Amino acid sequence: MWRRINSAARKGTGPGRGDPSAERSGARQAVIAVSNVSKAYAAGFKALKNVNLDIRRGEIFALLGPNGAGKTTLISIVCGIVNATEGNVLVDGHDIVADYRAARQLIGLVPQELTTDAFESVWATVSFSRGLFGKSANPAHIEKVLKDLSLWDKKDSKVMTLSGGMKRRLLIAKALSHEPNILFLDEPTAGVDVNLRRDMWQLVRSLREAGVTIILTTHYIDEAEEMADRIGVISKGEIILVEDKIELMQKLGKKHLTLQLQHPLVELPAALAAYDLQLANGGTELTYTYDTQSERTGIVPLLDRLSDAGIVFKDLQTTQSSLEDIFVSLVKDAP
Amino acid sequence: MNVPAMRAIYKFEMARTGRTLMQSIISPVISTSLYFVVFGAAIGARIQQVEGISYGAFIVPGLIMLSLLTQSISNASFGIYFPRFTGTIYELLSAPVSYLEIVVSYVGAAATKSMILGIIILATAGLFVPLKIAHPVWMIVFLVLTAVTFSLFGFIIGIWADGFEKLQLVPLLIVTPLTFLGGSFYSIDMLPPFWQTVTLFNPVVYLISGFRWSFYEIADVNVAVSLGMTALFLTVFLAIVAWIFTTGYRLKA
Ligand SMILES: Nc1ncnc2c1ncn2[C@@H]1O[C@H](COP(=O)(O)OP(=O)(O)O)[C@@H](O)[C@H]1O
Ligand SMILES: [Mg+2]
Image (tube, rainbow over the protein chains, first blue to last red):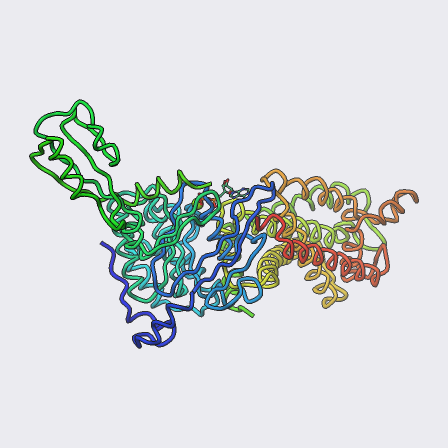
């Protein structure tokens, strides 16, 4: 288990931490504001189409989308690696082009690919990152970051001798070396084993507690579901939805009522045609799908009609659809 | 000015140099010694003197230039090409560093290394022939200007190249021939008149001539012209680098 990053080690960031009124206004002011950003790559391929997105201070934001949706492109634009074709981005009020120094100082980036310098030592490469971001040397901070990421005993090892999981942690250590307020994690758990994934989630949570805003991209829905405060769904270069995770689940969440029937049904009686019903398990299971948000769930009248039709059930249960179902239906319906 | 970043890049590049220090030093020492054996002893036995200087001593500035040019280009081109190749350039592009800071740090490190090698070659040459440096200050000026100018050229190649072959191509196909034909091992006066004129289109002639003047006060072209031409190359390469960074050529999609 990695050690938790304690908030005492971090300087207070953002306006009036702890003061509830200031906190509310801080939340209103986006820490990252992406406005009308489009990206056409050299070949003319449109990877982003008029993206508008606000990231709130201190939140964990999950950018969810299938491969090729434009997640990395969007992150790369905010971090200064790719030029936007149109639009602008403000990071804590600083324009990423005109005021790139101020903007970039606030950001730590953990890239999707495991790109590391093979011949450097762990210590040297992390110290290099800190210097690159304009911070004077601070061995105590580097030591802390390496310890938090369980890399301390590897500090003198050459990077090429590290395992894949260690390299991933090294990239996180490099990103945290300059004490950023905003951390981008581009598919942090792709190809990572279950334990490491859990550690990663724990780390992200403790960073958030320390006041760091976290934007992670993923195509694992359970990851977004597990981690995020808010979720943005991106597909084919367009943000098709941004929602609070909980609201998203409620709003778009479908519930299923499954009835175990006493006697198998061959087909549904015509009287029940108005309901979204499915027969399964050789006619012994009847599933009713309904919207949790709608005014009436329709359960009571359905049960009345079932008894009118003489259909008897011996048991029932309800299940809620996961983000995965929501996601699949969203991406399917996207233009 | 992001001084910690410049220091970090410079240190990183010098550490890379340090890891290959032995081959960096041994190979020029050996090749310089070989040049002296082949050119100095074998050919020098026949030529003996060029413009009143022993042939062995005459080729020293040319030898240093040869190594200064090739080393500056290969150090700087590799220094910037490698992060592009491995992908670690993402960090440089996302850091709060200006283009000028990036160029100064990479080019400064590459030039430092090639100047160290130049001085090692000078010292090695001193073992074979008596050396005389008439204008040490100008010698240093030409050394620094050339190292910086061609490190800039190397930086450009490192950004332009999209494979290791291209990285080798320019030094091999252009720089080495130009240096050999640029009067490293002979005086331009020794050529037939037609080739003397052709040679004046070779930029390396001006570098070697000026450098040699700082040693022995003999020059193929006027020293002021040499200095002017070096400054011109510097300006041209600076302009190209400025263009690269403003357009993001091969750096940013
Ligand atoms: N440098 C590039 N040149 C051309 N097309 C690119 C480049 N980088 C990404 N793309 C294309 O842009 C689209 C979005 O890519 P990316 O942002 O990496 O998606 P994601 O991170 O969501 O998987 C993909 O179709 C990809 O092929
Ligand atoms: Mg990606």
